[in-house]
Amino acid sequence: MLAQCVGWLGFTLICVGLAQLNRGITWSWAAICVGSNSIGWLLSHLYRRWIHSRGWKHLNWPALLPRVALAVVLLSVFWAVLDRPLYYFTDIPTQVKISKTAQFVYSVLNGVWILMLWSLLYFGYNIADRFRRSEIERAHLKATLKESELRALKSQVNPHFIFNALNSLRALIQEDPPRARQAVTQLANLLRYSLQSGQLETVSFEDELRVVNDYLALEQVRHEERLRLRLDVDPVTLQMVVPPMLLQTLLENAVKYGISVLPEGGEIAIIAREENECLVLRVTNPGILPASDSAPDHKSKSTGMGLRNAAERLRLLFGEEASLHLRPGDPGVVVAEACIPQVTTKPAELATV
Image (tube, rainbow, N blue to C red; front, side):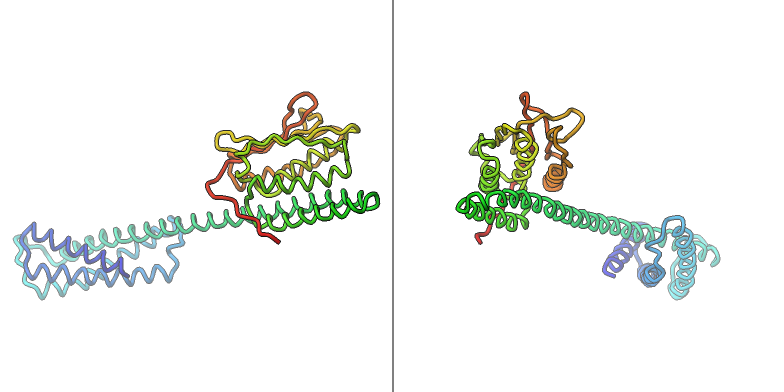
């Protein structure tokens, strides 16, 4: 309604201004301009209500154009009829005498272009508004889908590492009860971290390193001297952000498909560097990566679910600049390398339970 009033008021002022430039304004011309445009405002208001009630805003162009054309012509004829008394009751001197029929036709044509312009502006605005709303809804849907995908991926990662940790604990209970109690504490730390970090999108790399120490301690109970660890971490990377359980997933993969399948075991290395405003995280383990397969080792039957989930989480959180892939390193070594672009926000602090 406000746009209607402002638009017709502006159009009236333009008409009065043009009359002033053309022949000098008179009270008769002012009355005709104001009266005729008031009728136009009323008709356009009724036209707008008709459009809304009939759902024309949702029609496609082939269906809409003939309806608009017919409505504009009919309204212009009606407008010209309502305009006639204004000319009869005002005394306007004219230098050129024209018939009343010609005046009526002129009024109809004048109404046609005005209402057609009004229709273009009205439907153009609604199309733009509908497009804007659809973009907002699409962005909201994309964000909702992203959140649901992240939750689904987290629910797949966490049971995976819990299952491996329970296997390590089961192997220890009968052999060494004191160490089993210590392992229970370490497992509790893992579970607490999993529950707390499950509500977060990112955590600090320092927190992630702290919890994987408990995981590796559990794995060393089972593998003993077969599992050796080497840390090569740049201190500047400790405050960088990573998705929760990312390093955990890479280490599970390295232990299961690198250490477990080799009788002599081997060394797992965790290497972290800052490169081009990204945290580059590498986990190496002994093994052979077939050129035609992404499995960590040809002797094992890996579904690759953990790494695929981790790569998908990286993509959802950090976009296409993030990456995670396996590649061969030195002879007999497999490297899992993740590139994590750093965001400006700091990771949330984990609550103390």
